[in-house]
Image 1: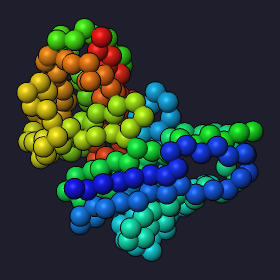
Image 2: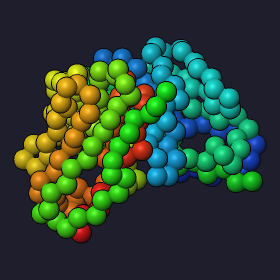
Image 3: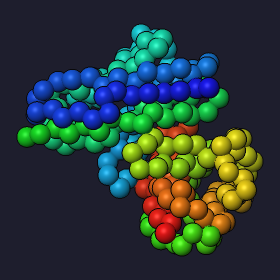
Image 4: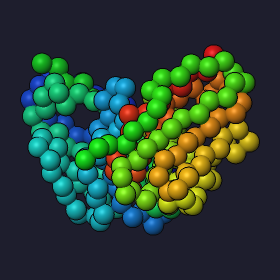
Length: 107
Length: 109
């Protein structure tokens, strides 16, 4: 059965304190690994899709990387407005989401 | 470009009642997904449509949930009868799950 896990469950950072979120997956025939940001009371907002091991994508303070077993979302010098839940999802036969990491960035 | 629209935004019902949610995807987007997101969890796929046809409904509890997509545009998701464990946010998405609507928060009492 396809499975996606994320760690840590929650993370508190000081503004400017860089860190990484982990997404581990066992998805048969992975066709893509997706990252989303979700704010309270809203639907997930698409950030990145990664298709093959070694691929990297960047957007502002975020950089996503992919290996054959996991993906990382690196957050460089975060700001309070980066506070949100970050979800990853693997797609093989269908989309399987992880439970998310709740990120709080304190000023 | 208009986003994915969903209504209602909130719904509170008693258990054993029926409820329906509506989704209008981005114009021209052939693929539409319904997800269930229980508090503190990631979204779980319920059903995927390609135009009018169902691509995957393997995780849809068919004894109480039904969904349709008439004319390959709008879609409705129905629960009949609702159970307490159906309390969740129901999300609609289109285009390879890249665009999500705001969701409908269902509370079953």
